[in-house]
Image 1 (cartoon, rainbow, N blue to C red):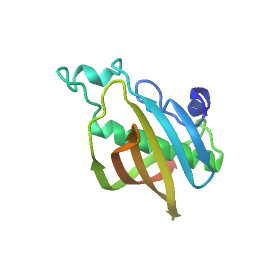
Image 2 (cartoon, rainbow, N blue to C red):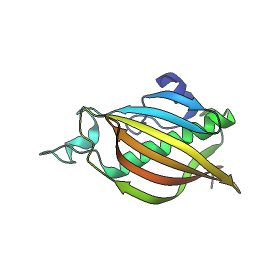
Image 3 (tube, rainbow, N blue to C red):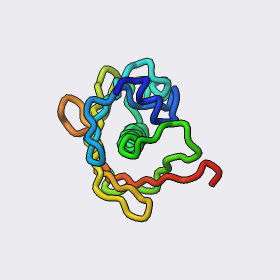
Image 4 (cartoon, rainbow, N blue to C red):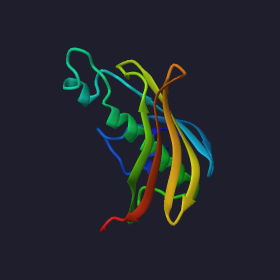
Length: 146
């Protein structure tokens, strides 16, 4: 999926769209995406000026967006809908090393199960083949009004 296809499936927009490309998609199973991390990211101005590091919460958000793409592509849904995909929990969150400008963050999301409208995913983010962060992410779809 290129950026235009991603924009068709996710409601996120700049500066909060954190996936640039999808390199692999297996319906109902897994998705691999890429986030190219550049010094031009707005968060690097303050995190941290003396040593720019991508905030861990944004790495988690990028993984969560990968889960959203996996779910929406699996259900064949587009961004034009009356519902949003909400994060409801994260377990087993681990950070292994910092992500810096120039890194290419490879995001992997694997669907573990769905139960009562809750989707559970095993996710990780890698740079140069090494895990920089991992988490079990739980999400659900809800009406925009709630």
